[in-house]
Length: 182
Image (cartoon, rainbow, N blue to C red):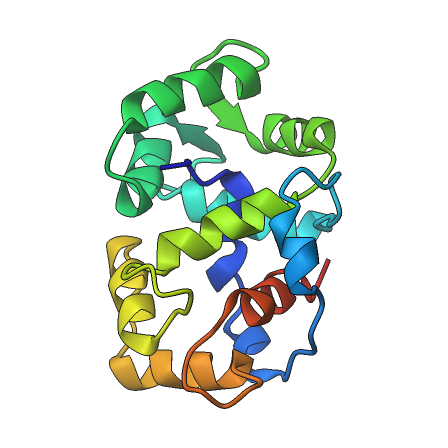
C-alpha cells in the first residue's frame, strides 16, 4: 500500500470547501497517468493548515511521534520505516523535528501535489475499495484522525462534493475538492 504524503491531509482543512459545488477536473485518461508532473500548488495558508494538522501539541514543530500518529491513522503497515525516511529528507537542520520552514521547503522541492498523491489520499478514504467514498467511510477515517463529527455531518460533506448525485464521492469529485483552492 502506498503511503500518503503530507499533503494528503488537506481533505479536512476547511469544512467550507465541502459545501461548494465542484466541477469535473480530470478525465479517466488523466487519472490513469500517475506520473504526471506536479500539477497543484498549495498556498501558504493551506500549507499552514496542513502543518497544523500534524502539529497536535501546537509547539510549532512536528515530532516523529506526531507524524506517526497521523500516518498510522491512515496506513497500518510500514509506518515506522516511512516516517524515518520522511524525517531524513524533511528534517533539514537535524534536530529531530520538522518545523514550518522545513515543511514548506520539502513541499517546494516536491513542486506541488502530484496526481498520484491525490489518488493515494483517495485510496486512504475508500476503505472498501469500490472506487467511491461514502459517508460511513469518511466518518471512520476522520475518527481515526481524531476529528469529531457525526454521520449526518459526513453525509453533508459527501453531498457537498457529490456532483453526480449517487451519494458517494468518486475520484473526479475527490480531485476537484482537493484542488479547488490551489
